[in-house]
Length: 159
Ligand code: SF4
Figure (cartoon, helix red, strand yellow):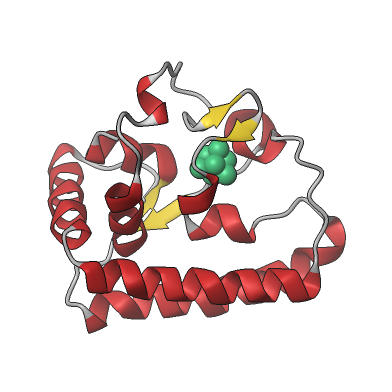
């Protein structure tokens, strides 16, 4: 969902906070992220660490996150959150001086996206495979599935 209604936003936040209290959800999301990284290590797409892909408006794309991923992120987010520093509402609030301030706990969409044109087909295949796995966690753990634009998710959960 690109935009949440007030009611959807409240429901999403409630479900994220409930799931964030469940270590098994964090472990399952983390296990998938570990396998995502193994695929990245095997393929080695190029990242120039330009930070452009995190400036969504200028780059022209959006990042989406699921309920379970947001719960894992919320649970591991350091306090105070880097987002609390300052944010003008554009780009990602966790990008600090061109770098990701939450690199170790960033969501799947951040992990699998590379602007390396030679990896586009590989990325799409990986996205579909791992997103399906992440989605299946919602059934396994009986967590309502939301698929929410990253900044909408951040605002809803208040991180
Ligand atoms: S969480 Fe990190 S990698 Fe993801 S968009 Fe924000 S700054 Fe970029």
